[in-house]
Length: 492
Image (tube, rainbow, N blue to C red; front, side, top):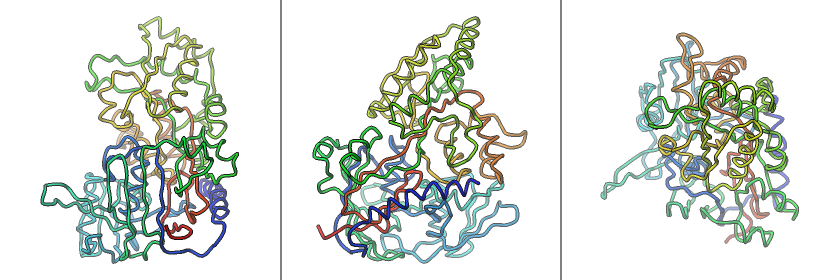
């Protein structure tokens, strides 16, 4: 069922892509693609801790490739691995690598691949029986290994140290990084020796951290081929007959209560579970999705969206102020209920609007929420030291495979260490990646939610404004860009 839902979900994206192709349908070599990015990226290292990991992944995917990839229909496809197989236990996986070269001219080998993946997941064992064969052994069954290795964090990166002691990152992708100003500008140039054939565009340039004020006023992108949009900007652009694509509601907007029991945040007392549950019942998710996100988002009751799993509706999520007030009163009889300090991304106006709305909703149940803006809130290092009780996060959907997506979300939200085991001998990660049925994933997700450490708020789409000169720019259902076949009209 989930596969059928996923196929249906991407039809609109494919139709839009075809419609935007417009004009000439014959791809052309040459030209420069210029892209505006709202967020700043300090590194394209797939393992770097970034404030905006989805933006980092868009840049790094041009240079660094994974062994596998998922297509628009959610099917796993070969990338740097030409084929793979597993033993009966699904604990030993064998991957055959295609012939490909790194950007420095050296050949991709199984030893290079093993060294890169060992940084991504040191819990697995890696070996190279020969130059083109990689073997991965896991301590538990992994039914979704090929889908997991399509995640950006598993991109193959060769790391070298230059004469100045700086680490140089080398990839195999269709574009190589030729200019880099951290947080400001990046230029990628076509790799003429790419194993998949030279890309069409000569180069792709990204300008980071820029406002769209001028483009929105002029109602045109000018020299830029594409830019990200926030949901509140979509209507203005669409009304002027501009090309806008929206992913499915995929990013998770979620309130996460920060841990206090491990000593990382001394002086902060945990928020009582009854108060956490009361806050979840007080939040008017429908109003947030329909008003603040202009009916583009959907109310969230689970970690994964309904369109991906088919079971999110079973978690409920309806507002219930009467029950919220009861829980708050019950908690007040035993503990002192302090105001909940809620941190949000200060660079995101919509995050502020949602935090303010949560404050209003909480007040209806007698709960005081104090929202405040915080820089770098999306990094775990910063969250561990915040003087806050909870954070409002926007977490991207990194995969359209439900099991892989759930495992990634649990990791992104920091739920795995404190999460209850699914069974006496089974930890969270094996239960997810070893799942063979949707019912297994539902049970894991239910346990993630039952302690009310996380309060899902909304599933939010990603929006893209495309110039008419850009062709074959594919935005997948979860907002991921696939631009390996991108080309532009004329030469600039």
